[in-house]
Length: 157
Image (cartoon, rainbow, N blue to C red; front, side):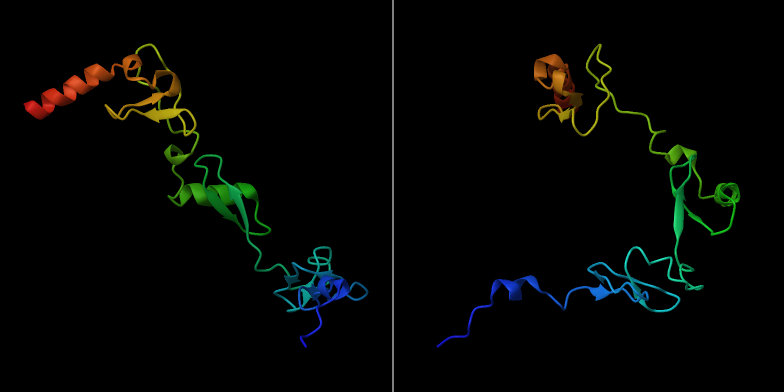
């Protein structure tokens, strides 16, 4: 005959998953454990930084967002945030024109419409290739004939 099917208790226990916290008195089984770089032991979230290791966290990296260019800047532990920003700005990698909010928005080219175009409301006309808002997506509403005639003249000339 065949092997016996596992019972419900066997299916619920997965001893090979996760690791136990090395903190004295804890021993919690953690499925996403943290390994300390300083002492090379495993800890749960609660004891990750509070287990008494002096070398722990030396390789941790903190990044801040530059208010001028929107780029990520590595913050050196113990350094003033102002010094970090100054080092970044004087290093030549800070370009305020690259800031995501500084870019000018595309707008619908239809006469009298100034709708800002984005991924949700932009439509590219199949006839003329113009990118317009949804309100002006039909050819008769965005001078598509004029665009098509101009393209035909350029081809014929």
